[in-house]
Amino acid sequence: MALPPERFTADPDFVPLTRPALADALRRLGVRDGDTLMVHVRLSALGWLIGGMDAVVHALRDVVGTAGTLLAFCGWEDSPYHLLKLAPLWQRAYREVPAFDPAVSAARRDFGRFPERLRTWPAAIRSAHPEVSFTAAGPKADRLLAEPTDADPWGSDGPLGRLVRDGGRVLLLGAPIRRLTLCHHAEAIARVEGKRYHDYRMPVLVDGRAVWREFRTLDTYYGALPYYERADLAITSPVETLAQQAIAGGAGIRGRIGLATGWLFEAPAVVAAVVDWLERNF
Image (cartoon, rainbow, N blue to C red; front, side):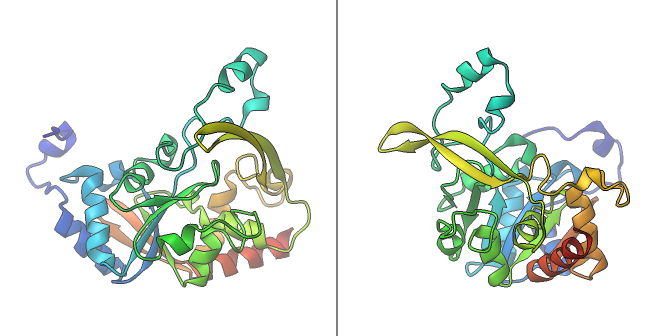
């Protein structure tokens, strides 16, 4: 058993969060049986949760039930996305990175512990794109993660586009609103000029061997649009700014979960609000 931090044990009135208590809080926030739910988690924000991230997944599954599906954005830990920005010796070293394998390649750690925990959950599956990589568990996982026919993993036929078409929802469980990855889908489909794309090569596993392939995706890392060049908008975090438009448009509701703030967003409403703001400002 892991020992809780002293700031919790020193308070005789503090009650640790449990799986049933977390499930009850999620239901009060509005998570429902049968939901298709994309989830972002900051575990430390919840206080002390008995069972840690395992309890988070169990509680989510308790609430969405056997008809519900959980979705998370994985990315790929230590991927060579920035390869050409590295020094030559580093580039040479990174060309030996193990090829991306959806079955074993780890999720990015800076997305928190939830994506990797869900990725390794029994019966979870992983999408095949090495950079814009998602994982899902539940009866709609196969449909959500099928390869996009338009070759645009952020676009209408990618996992987030399918989440929107399914009337899905997004839960921020202690995570800040700048983690609302769904905003990148809105960027992808908004009818605006000046979108930025990133061209890169990554090794993928093909018949047991590494094959370096070319990819081109919306540049969500450095900025899909010239946000920082718009002094009039005073943008310091593009996703946070876009998420605020969704909140202002009534796409999300806020509640208390443990010691954390939880947000539950309706995916179609988020995308509608963000697309509208982008098309008016860009």
